[in-house]
Length: 156
Image (cartoon, rainbow, N blue to C red; front, side, top):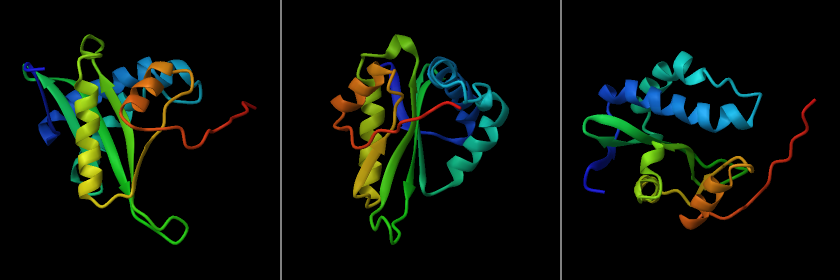
C-alpha cells in the first residue's frame, strides 16, 4: 500500500474525482440500472464535487498514486429529526481503479469514512449496493455492514 495515499480530497482533485465517479457510473450504475444517467458525472460532477468539498456534512476522500486520483469515497451526514432521532452517516460512493481492488485500499477508504462518522457523532453508518453487485455486497459485509432493509422495485 506504500505507493497509494488515502487522504481528504481538495479542490485540486475535482477533475480526478469526476473521472473516478465517471468510471464508477460506467461500471456499476450504468450497467445495472437503466434509469440512471450514466453520463451524469461528466455533465454535473464538477459542480457537485465543488459543492461537496465545501459542505461540512460531507466527506470526500481520495486514493492517490503518483499524483493521479485512482479512487474515491464520498459520504454524508444526515442530522437527526423527530422520525429518526440519531445522526446517520451514509457512504454514498466508493470507487477504486480495478488494479487496486483486493489490496486493502477500499478498506482504508471505508475505515476513514467510519472514523469520520464516529467523530461526527453518527449513531449508525449505512451504504447501499445493487443486489446484482455481489462483489460490493461481500466487500461491505467484510467492513462490518449487514443487510438492514431491501428495496424492491417494479419497472413500469
